[in-house]
Amino acid sequence: MAANNKEDDKKNNNEKSPTINYNLIGLVVISIAAFFGFGAIFSQMQLNIGAQASSAAFAALFILLSTKFLMEKESENNLKNEKANKVFEANLKDYKNASQKMLKIMENNTITEKEIHKLLHSLADLIIFGSHNSRVAFQEFITKSQKIFEEALTTGGINQRDDDINLKKEDSIILWKYIVKFQIASREGLDLDIKRLDKESLNKTFVQLISQQDNIDNKFGTSEYEWLLRKGSTKRLSIDEFKKIEKELENLIRKINEAGLKEKIAKSQITFRNPKFKNKVIMFINDYTKKTGTFRCDITGTPSREFLERYEKELTKASILTNASIKPHGKNNNYMLFNLNAGDETQIKIITDMLKAYMEEFHK
Image 1 (cartoon, helix red, strand yellow):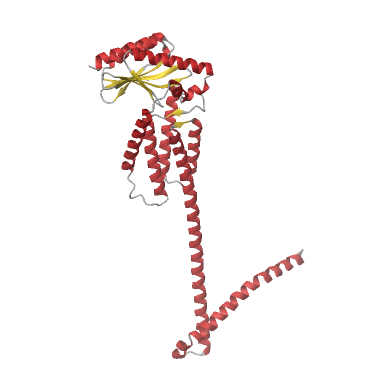
Image 2 (tube, helix red, strand yellow):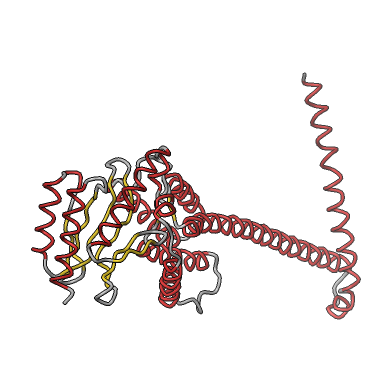
């Protein structure tokens, strides 16, 4: 075994010797070149041959060490640049993935629980390379999405995990603001120029564009059938259940028409306006809730809370499922949210009576 170790040591020494020999040969060559190169200087200094050879050797050693240092430094810089490029590419990939997930939600104008989980995945990815400001903006987008989802669960707008929620105009505007904030923070995190990107100006631009697009979308009228199809909770209805709800909605719209209001069915909601008073909107139908079998509605803001409280009590007395509530709107106005069973004639009468009284009292 000792003999084997000796053979291995000998083999290792033989493997190292060529490198050592090459270095020694290189040093000798540089020394000779330095000796003849500095010959003129040495002759003027009147140094003997031994001193000249020693000086040439030291000069060669200095050149060799300085060259080695410069090459190592260059190699180190190349490694740093390569690392920086890889980090930039990975960072850019994470930013683009996160951005695409947000933009997909805005493109479809809907959000699901599955999409929220995907957003959480991207937030975890941003911890590795993402900037602090980009993570904050992305987290704000997720938090707002979760609140929208929680509200839909509370109001019964969705019943299943894979139900999608249609985004309201107000929610879309808020989410777009977070996207703008994220995009600017991403450019900043990538050390890209952001001097010409003004966040406030971009936010105003998106608000204007979203409002304009919403007006365009609302100009395209649709039917009760198409409106119901867009609601996530109706996807779980059987054909017979869907037809029943469609007929109840048609009956509700007809009764409100008889009360003096004109409906407008858009992609996201149904509005009821007073044609005799500047087409002012009084009532909205926003969604359908399968769990309670009701439509989620609201009455627009009015300075008289007492007026709303009177009909809030009547609706609650008619059915506890109405879940009527009054909320502040602006400085002096209040509005009322409630669930309406379109198959309950008692509830429909309360609503039509309220709409008539609303027009008589506030549309003079």
